[in-house]
Image (tube, rainbow over all chains, first blue to last red; front, side, top):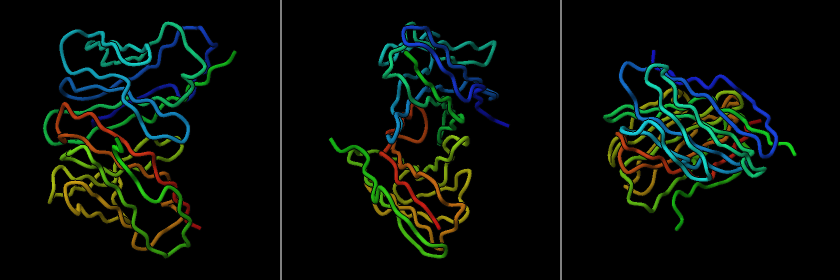
Length: 113
Length: 114
């Protein structure tokens, strides 16, 4: 069955430290890949997306993600985390055609001083 | 720019009561969606409308009905609310249901069923 897995439910990092959030998918074909961020009490906002081409994609707020076909992964990274990055992060996957996105269960990021 | 607007933002219901969540988008998007968000479950799709005049079930449609009133509006109705429907509901829209379909989300509606 098609699925999106975010293995980490909750991650805590120190401000200024680097960050990597994991996302794995299980689809027959290469899907379209997204990362969304949700600040407390807010809706979701798109951070970045991958459709094709360069496997390293840049997003807003200094985030980047790398698509690795061999590992069926699309991990989100940031070199230096800021306190304002504390939020919940969702990986989402979609296929071509008339199908909605499927979301992972999310990873909550806490940032400590 | 309003984007996606949901009403109400908060609602408390008693078991068995009915209510409708309203959603409107002003981006001329073709597709609209209703998701629910529960702790540890991520976002789960309830219903979606790929285009005006069509609706389809998502992952968790039981207990819900939807109406795509026009291109702008997509409502979600709970006919007989149950405590299991306590959740945060998000409406979203996209230009197309297929890719590249970036979703734009409303701010959510928090529903509590007692």
